[in-house]
Length: 360
Ligand code: UD1
Ligand code: UDP
Image (cartoon, rainbow, N blue to C red; front, side, top):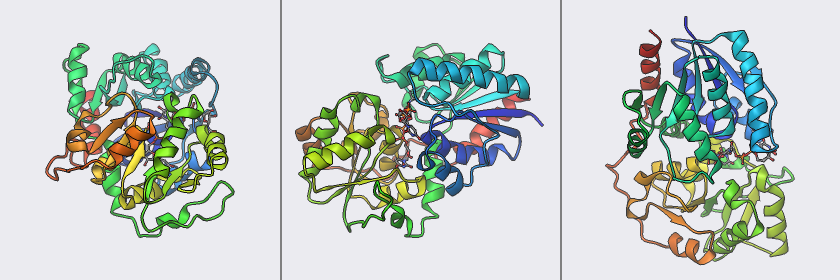
């Protein structure tokens, strides 16, 4: 049986791993390497438990620090594992530092790299994930593209016959786990002290964690001010990057419409998506899930990541400016129920089939 080493490290990768690994293990031996980039219980373990993801074979415990330090240390330690395991392929997801480190460690050992979520581009190297996307794509042998607009980028960068449009594993996960919700999920929300949070009947769901939006107080505060103007409260599970800032701003400004909670597991997150009035986020995953659930979304970011989601105001890009966010949250939105550019919910099967053909 051929051996595949999968490298993951961050929350969105655990979600994609859950659906891909389930199919991958029917045909291949998978060795799972967790870099440790995300490590809090509710940023890592909760996903493995709730989504039945196999326990990692290696956890390298590498997190925090500068991009260079984190990535460099990951390359060193992933290389050691790859030298020991001698896999036939290394599989990476998305655009985090763990993705790029896994790809670079593998290609230097002449192990073919398979990149899931290839071809996303926003057009600026100021975005740390863009660097990871470009480098990973260019050292990979097999590219899986989630949505049609990514093909243009692949073609522009000279890729010809190594990419496959298979749909989005995030959509696979959304369908699979949404059908298993039992209505108890929102009882799991807890505040920063671990006390249960009472969930209002109607609410907005917000997240904010991108480096670009968390470098100063100003941007998060503009988002909070927009949420304060809304008729219902906003539930905000706070990424650890923003924990102290969010708490300080809410207390100092006496914001009453913002419910801060600890980060939640995926199952609770999609329950929030399905129940929310609208969504405000800077997350790549959440803006797609809003689209999957037919919920209007405002994405606080200067660049369009998923052009397919923006027709008819379904997903509007906003500046970190309270008026801009508020106006867009009140826009008229029309979903075309027949338009589903993220596949059919079976991308994992297509990915595994192609890997099989590649490794023949
Ligand atoms: C990373 C990815 C980003 C992705 C996000 C998903 C990169 C460059 N960025 O950003 O693309 O959208 O994950 O959530 O790889 N921290 C904790 N506990 C944790 C995890 C992180 O306290 O469990 C702290 C870290 O110590 C660090 C900060 O949060 O100080 C940021 O973490 P990091 O992994 O560097 O970046 P993310 O913002 O999570
Ligand atoms: N998510 C989660 N718990 C949270 C916030 C988000 O499970 O507290 C999920 C969300 O539903 C989406 C994914 O995490 O599936 C997105 O991850 P994140 O926003 O951290 O990263 P990005 O997608 O921007 O890379």
